[in-house]
Length: 371
Image (tube, rainbow, N blue to C red; front, top):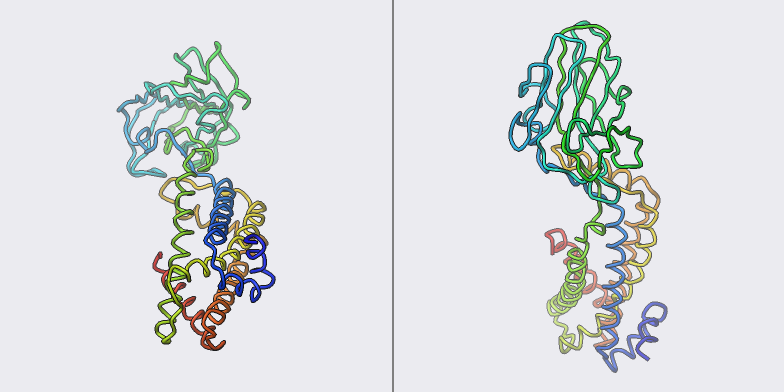
């Protein structure tokens, strides 16, 4: 039976390959390759569900790069575009005043839907304030307008104000269940402006800078629906691995003056060794479920975030198990291929193993170049 021969490759390869070589059956290798694809897709699905990519509105830094565009900044102080003191992009929005408070307001933006279950879940920005007297602000609030200045959500951010002259990140969860105060029944489905207000006990020369302001969320490719593109890549890769591995064995055997017979028959037989890939994929998928979630931020320091998150995986026992697991799969596949070469043409064991090892080395070299 085809199914029995596939399983025998794992625990009794000599017996299995004698049967397969005597009567090559494309149905068997087709089953193996389908299992390879299914297990690889499952691994990709699990890995993708663990990795979250940032999505922003606006996609660029336009809100804090210009005072006027498809948006409008207003303030009770002197507004300017600060190309010296900024955190991301090329500038920040700055307001200066001799007063006890500074208000910075962004409006005239297209309505943004921030209701529960929709695209955006956070408000993010960088803030820098200075007070020439060195005093800290006594209060800070953020407002999200909904259609007009009289309808808004409000939240206290005094605990996030940071220190004099230092840039501070402010990240606020948004939505109906996030504890925002409401005035005049605002609607999370229609956010049309943002206002930042800092208040000090006494008047002084004040300056407030805002940078990198946007609404954002984190979603993986499963949630975004792009995981299917990754699945196609996995399917193509599975087919290419079969073709490349079989082709390398034939080429290396030729270099040793050995003929492995008709190439189409050999490809059917060699395809059975990839049942090992199914086993390693299953174990990889189980291990992947134990890995922590990773978030990737889209900005000038994305390389840093990628390295930091990758490091958090590298510290886990599951991730550390993957490298030896991959090598076990490589060695196992190489050994099974040597058995096939030996059994097909009664090639001496030493030569059969040498052909298989050299083919494996060539495969590693090709993979280093993206093949």
